[in-house]
Length: 116
Length: 111
Image (cartoon, rainbow over all chains, first blue to last red; front, side):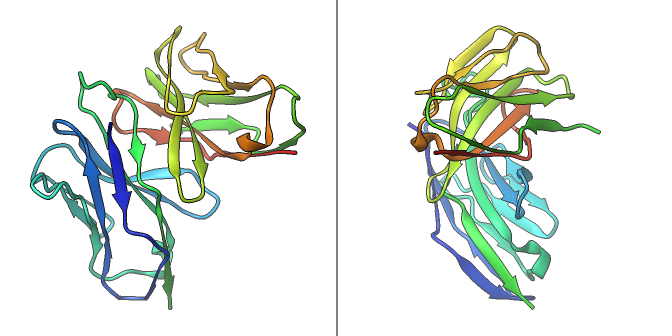
């Protein structure tokens, strides 16, 4: 079945540092890939997504590239802010027609803390 | 405002006392899902629904029931809660099954 593996946290950075959170996946075919963010006390929000190989998703200075050859979707940001402190989840979904279409498979989440 | 709402947000109960967590969305989405979030495990799908009267099991359906009588509502029912169902629960909806929109969460403690 499908699975997602994220780098273990927590990750602690100083403001303006470079961020990478690694994500690799196992799936058949060509899943859609997502990064969701969960701010303290809130539900999950879609941060960015990519639906086919070599696509780059981007939002709020974050970006991730769908790498089929390495089955990866690493999240990056060039200069983090204190307000980026949150839990980040990598996830995948089968495309339409897939057996797991409509279901998100999540990684375990990575806690990011950014200090001033 | 487009949103997914859940009630209650916090609930403390005792083993065996039936409870229902409501979920409602105002975006006319066909897909709705329930997830539970546990430390170190990410989110796991409990049940999902592709449309009215169409539901199916997710990864961890044991001990839960759902119903989808109206498009906007998708309640989660725990007929006889147990302590291992203590968790943070999220409802989500989706227009086409991929990008999902999450509610604020319901934190449940079963004593």
